[in-house]
Amino acid sequence: MKARIAKIRNFATDIKSLSLTPASGVEFPAASAGAPIIREIPGAERVWKNAYSLVSPDDRQKYEIIVRRAPHSRGGSAWLHDHAALGQVIEIGMPVNLFPMEASAKNHLLLSAGIGLTPFLSYLPVLRAAGAAFQLHHCCRISETDAFGALLPADENIILHTSRTSLDLATLLSSQKLHTHLYVCGPEAFMNVVVASARKLGWPQAKIHQESFASATGGAPFKVKLARRGIQLQVKDDESLLEALENVGLSPPSLCRGGACGVCELPVLEGLPEHRDHFLSGAKREANSAIMACVSRAKTPELVLDF
Image (cartoon, rainbow, N blue to C red; front, side):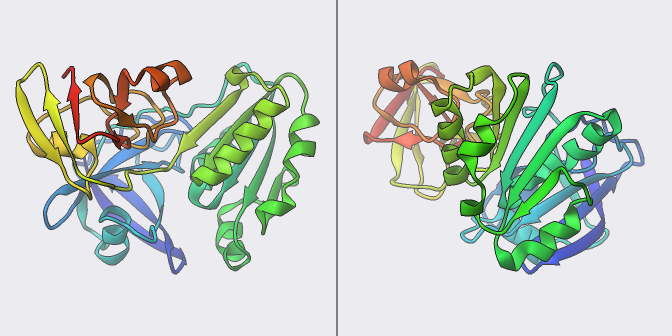
């Protein structure tokens, strides 16, 4: 879909929001709380595809996203911070919700850090309108207190932490009632600690939900042979396997592009993957029988895929 940048608002030097309106004049598709869109961003050598959470649920006239400039951006967030302008038309994909609220939950515990707050900004109006029980704990740097404070409504159930160490995970997680569902989003290290703490305390996997904002970080180049097509290609050090496939005109299935949804899973016939995802089971990792094309790479010089 084509979307026009209708408004840009700066919250901090590296955090800004963009309001997008339909360039065609036709309403956007409906999007539920937690849904992201894929944004296509032109680059010098390729088109970047990044997933960003919508913070404006149930609004078909406007999609709003919040973008943090990544310290080592490969093109996506840097382009939006440096080149996005009012009236500009960009390409976006259809919203697909990979991080929905659990309808059966009687209490929602939301834990976020940094830009991981964005999906929860779409949760909050829905939860408050429904009168649902919830609590949001958001961690950020002291220097970002004003920026994130401006994004959050005043509510006694919303707690802003200026240090992750001030968030007593053990006490918070152990004091929850059985009908509580946990949602976590933010940097990998933060999510790993939260999820590990919950599992240690006996939280069932079905009540732990997470969304990753990780993106492919590059690494050593490697070769890929596509067994079904009989072709071989090179994955460069600064591109993902998914991008390498797309750059030769292939269209493997994908959604989140962050290693969380499982859509881009491809079977591995030969070689050892370097797993960087949050989806594959321990058994599949040990068997090295699959790879998540969006973030994972290779430990061996070549992988043979059943694709």
